[in-house]
Length: 490
Image (cartoon, rainbow, N blue to C red; front, side, top):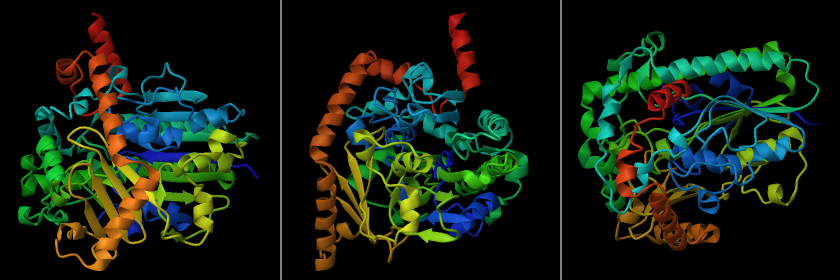
């Protein structure tokens, strides 16, 4: 039987910052309650630890290297069919409310309607990230530390507007006999780490947990990770006091986002549609919050590449902990499954699986999950492979990394860095590369990416234009972008 689908997606919410994940500090009562009446996917990952390529991959239900939306300056443009269009073409109402981070509302992104959409700046996005062969200094990194603390922000104001619009939309759909799908996208807890005072005050900076590998001597010694850390250089702007304030603000923003989710779920109940609606909560990627010396995302540690994922509703068992690997690419298959849309050759070729299937089938440790990164700060393609207890990270032209997440959940011990490897480690390294090459040739993908990005740089007017014409730290809200357009027209 066809059901409605309500996808709630946040931005930059790390997978461990949930009460239901066992976090000792953060308060997320609404998401915890959702997990209790549904399934919590504890090994879920983003297709790329960066907003724009992830959202393109999520829309298409396919890997970044296959759709070739590599980076933050190559946003989804509607040319490749999205799962939203697949549903809409069969008469299913598919509405977005909030952040999309596609190219433009003028493109046919597949939605019946886009309410309060946030797209990339100027239809271009963050072009500085294209300059990977000749990376500039990225001075905007210091803004992350400068914007920490209690107070209002355009992002939290935007989230409140998204929440209110969703409440009205759900009320208007009350009594609808036809299945619908809604993609509701909040921005919190994405930086700036400026948090409404009520939620900031839930956390005392003095009680905050210090990051993993807070001592610089414990941090990774890897050539490509050093390139990423040197480019963004967020960590040098955080002393311990500022770090604790940043964590309090991040947890506060997480609780604020949870509050918005709670309002939306209450509105769903009030509309009388909750019993016939599958609810999926995810984030587009995580946030390092100082772990291993990194802030924001861009790397393949669990806090960045891992995502929270919860599903509840018809066909999903209650209180289920799913350890099978999952990915945001699974949302496309889930949408087709839940709404009862007909399959065709394209939808049958989707890379993902329905979350309802994953939640009802026995856990499968052998499922292979891929995440990849080809954006700012990196000098080469990065590919993460997850299966069983292993995480293998392949850097084209650099040494790989290997972690045993059962024995080392904090990823402090890179097993590939030990020249005196056991047979087990050597076999896991070979298995990781074999699984990667069964999906793609990393060298060929890396070469294709740099070719595409060189053309994109030329199309935008060259390196100088990328460096100066499209410089910003975080995407302005729709109202801010409108003011920018009005100002440029004067």
